[in-house]
Length: 215
Length: 215
DNA sequence: GGGGTATATGAACGGTCATTTACCGTACGA
DNA sequence: TCGTACGGTAAATGACCGTTCATATACCCC
Image (cartoon, rainbow over all chains, first blue to last red; front, side):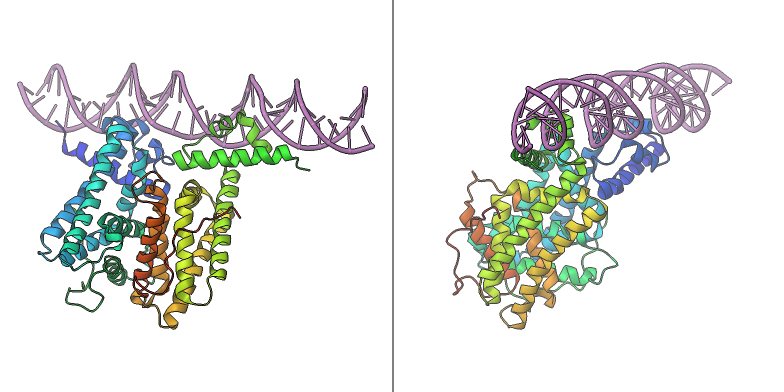
């Protein structure tokens, strides 16, 4: 049976790994650094994970699963209008990359060191996220509220996700661009890319980016 | 004096490193792999580069310099219209990431393993490329042909470059999306993002992406 | 033909890596 | 209270890393 203390150590290892992978990348981070950040010695890691690779897998999969929970919840609460659903989805992606910068960057960059079935699991999650956005775009196009470039929901979805996915690379809380304003701009950019209704329209411009709780 | 043979070996090492860094990344590629790909043993690398880091620096800097030459040439030949200049710049970025996928990916991802002055050199080049695009956007906004989100050329420039920079991650020559069509779509997306004149307009839609020669 | 230079070899170096193993304290259930 | 499983330590393992260096070979100019 796993005691409470065990769970805490495991989570501390995952948290330390998140920060280190964010700062230096998976390959440039040693097991020693991860465990030392928790006050342990190297061997302690292997009481909780069978290998460094498995730790990465658990971490990256959790990051993707959390994002999937956020997007499906946002979509469910956004109502029936495809434009609202689209804006809500983009808002989640932007907020995730701004608020959980470390996790987002690890999820978007370090997953490529996985191999075999572990890599496939993560790729499947990434495909679902892309398809979710593409589905909303397709619905909007069929409803006549979107005018997609090349008629392709896939291209637009990919471009929007790529654009959002790199926010975590440059966004800083102490920069001159506030989270609220950055958020507003990226939603507007995404709406323009989809050929949707342009800026001053009925869709409620979010007063602030959604705060994403840990779920 | 450097003989012809020296130049060829050096270039072969750079070419082999490009492919390997593209496939596995800088850290996951050993000196042994680079040299073996050229039919050499490990030590041979140090006749041409003082270190593995320096090889990366030379390679990444060359990739950026070549892109800078392409963009400034495209801008110079695009005429005075900011919309034309903008489209020409985006076309170069798209074409570079589609045609020189290996080099583009190495340039965009592996530079972060550089440190100190070498990293600064590359960052300066990246800043120039971003500023070049932002300058054209600003000119277009002042001329009244662009309507930038948040009035910010920097935000739009960054979003466009991020979107284009990831093309090399997913684009495949043998995919269902032809280079010409992909090129067309991304220019259209970039024009929409800038709030420029929408799709059927006087600006010549490129019949094909520009072929970028080695310069 | 001989001397110097350029370039590759292959063995060695010190270091670090992920992982394994033996061992030890401690807390908890029987 | 005993024993057992858990979660930590410390040390060792073998592999691989980037880099160095003495040496060998091929080539160009005199």
